[in-house]
Length: 276
Ligand SMILES: CC(C)(COP(=O)(O)OP(=O)(O)OC[C@H]1O[C@@H](n2cnc3c(N)ncnc32)[C@H](O)[C@@H]1OP(=O)(O)O)[C@@H](O)C(=O)NCCC(=O)NCCS
Image (cartoon, rainbow, N blue to C red; front, side, top):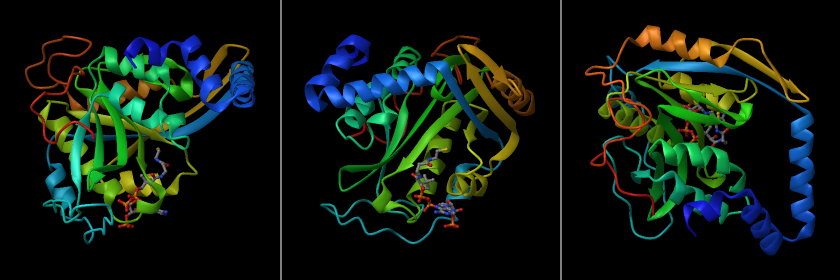
């Protein structure tokens, strides 16, 4: 499947109809229509500077190795958690997500389009060759599904979302290991800061990000009624707040999207390999 066919809404609808039936197609269409009429959510935005103490200092807090139970014994990383960190082409990862009914929600075609267009590299963690966790991250421009729109990010600031660990593999230190490696990867591409947002009810995620040095920037409550949007605080304000906290990236080129330090494209020779 090429990029065009995987993100074209009509083809996507046809694919859902063919593989999951009319009932599922109608259910999704109704859900989308409802969201167009009314949508609301709220989340606390967090940021972490990438200068100063590096993720290696963070990785020292990782727990005992996990049991993979899937194929050959994986490499044990310096962090103490077994498995492999990898960087992934968002479209590759998107195709993989769509193959799993339980994960298809994470393959939003609009998000994939922007990520691919900006040369983002998402990250993943695998055990015995099987992907058990992933994380979406990128700079330059990012599509945020919660608001159904794309945002330009300040230079040197990355946005991170949907850190996800397969349910049977949780509480083994994988989420923290994946994030620690992701932060290291961002730093190697000259990003100076990273932001994410977490709904208040997601205690697990708040604990995870807090333990990695993320601190709150502010809360955004979002409501959209019949296409008119209301924000308690505009996300752009929090992005600017993070940017002024971090300062400009070293060797700023101003290129956007992709290319240039912290401009979106992650170095080809970064750690790890493509997601399997
Ligand atoms: C959030 C998530 C990624 C954590 O991954 P994980 O591999 O289980 O996390 P780790 O084992 O590395 O735990 C790291 C820290 O996260 C926090 N944490 C993880 N699970 C938690 C839970 N169920 N309750 C409270 N805190 C939790 C703890 O602070 C933990 O550190 P500790 O064990 O030293 O106390 C995982 O629960 C998940 O995929 N959830 C569903 C998707 C999601 O909500 N993603 C976040 C979107 S904002």
